[in-house]
Length: 374
View 1 (spheres, rainbow, N blue to C red):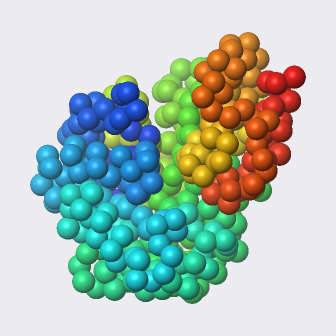
View 2: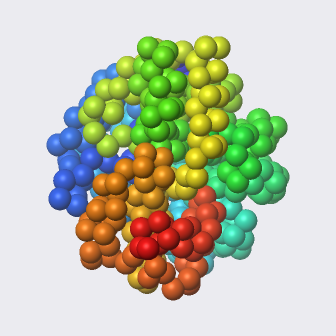
């Protein structure tokens, strides 16, 4: 395992993202999560990432019960985040932070990130002195490192890093499909991090599972290599840039954990042949009319019509990519029996304000309705 070049307390360059934990009956499956956490730590890794809104609040308490209570604090590194939904004024921040410590069962966070920064919510963080509060908490020993997670264009990141040069690390979305995508702007965002000498944490390296559940044509490209899993090419691509501190993987079962560990424990960058295969797969994706949703589910909670937006988008993508007739049944008889259909959208725009991908969700729901409700 390679030594982390940026933060010596982090083991290796692989991190456990806790937004998509194993579930059973609507609750985190503690037995499975414990097995996964044990395998992760036994393999030498130690970085866990969470946020208060993940799994409707279950992620933090799962970490408390399955990691914090079972391991000495020095054996794991924990990141949490300050999300704009949970504070309205400066005086709200400290009580919320203390609540997060309690929920996670720790007395400090190794990393604390200003969450999902973009041009819309940055003003709220700035006006409420959120950054200054985090730096104060660091001086008190309750935070070891202050950073941001980021979802916007490169010029916005440049402004934030100029305003707050004390920021120590930046978490960005980076994967081989999005890298040169003008909407996500990953390449330019990464280059701003390099310009400001900020280590990078990578989120969404498999794009919410899209780079594992590939179209058949794309699978064939990787299958020719006779190498690792589809996930392996995605994570190794993301880890291959010089300024990468760690790559987060949101694993939801032991099989995924074991697969990820198999190639990240003895990590090696993609070779020339593998890089060429990745470029071919990117070209295949560009030819398809796929909705680039990562299933973060930030859009769901505030929807007045209770539309399962990411699930409908996934259903749409499967229909488009695989021409799978089962998706019609799934749409009609599973996803919309107790929740809204795409055509139920009242165009209030709450979903678009919450979307870190800045998708035009209202227009996309019209596409979904056209595909499934004719």
